[in-house]
Length: 444
Image 1 (cartoon, rainbow, N blue to C red):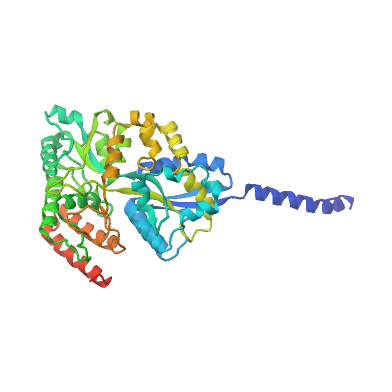
Image 2 (image 1 turned 180 degrees about the horizontal axis):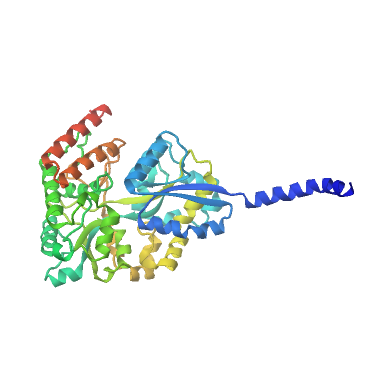
């Protein structure tokens, strides 16, 4: 009886201790949707450092390929699905999402959570990249990495073939060198280029080719200009190049597949994102890799794109403060220092901060740094085509309708690259689909 009374007396104390313990170990789950590019894989691998410093937060990851990520997060945002607390959004999406009230304003979050933003230094963000993330003067995402595009080539293969790469090659020169290097019998493709369908996949490099051949997606009133001689010349050139002097299975090649071929010395050159240079530097073929500017055609602009992958917080998130803490950490100069310590300076996320390019360690480890920064600063989304266009963008057009139109055309172009339909058929069908979409949207 006495023992029972003693237990009853202790119950309030035990309950209090249990509650205190539960509070101490309570965690908020922050769900992150991101793309499976190498920089993001590193972010996930190093995120244990953030969790150790923030024991009240548990990170949950959904890592997808580019096309699937774009579709999944856009659909979730449009229907108010509230599946994610942090989303990886591109330079195309961010301002559009801000206009739709799908993302929290970073400026407002920084004002309401000053401790999390302390020491972040927003002024250190590269203006060319930061400006692309603004809507109505407010920042709606923070850049994880930024990029332009340029030519990466295996200098050893060119030397052995008695070839040289101009600092500013033309597409004709690229094709000539690539086909000289092409040696499928020994497992070497002359060039690797993207062919996997998607507005941000095969159409990213292809749109820069179109720009330099004098074409563009739309005129300044929003009328599609896809079935034009300029598009025909650009797509015919690209299809011929990848079919004659590229690896087989072009429509299955995206960024990771091309990176693997270049890393293993199985491709002579690659025209793609400058961010790839850091990963190639540490690869099997790293010592052989050199760089040149993105190729030009008859038109000498619109050849180098401007892109960034960014972290934003959907307005449907119920863990906004915790999500904000993470994106401040993952896009900070301290995170760049962490990657440098763990993976080397050549592997740090590029294209986001002025201070990165001022570091002697980075300049020494990344001989491509100066060219990358120059390409980012030279890319002009407001003047990337021969004639005025309906909206800004180098390798995309920043209107809501572009995503659907771009994906439809990308699939048609992939069919042409695979030889399933002619270039003329692809462009005719693409023009009709784009006209229907733009008329439905009320552009004309």
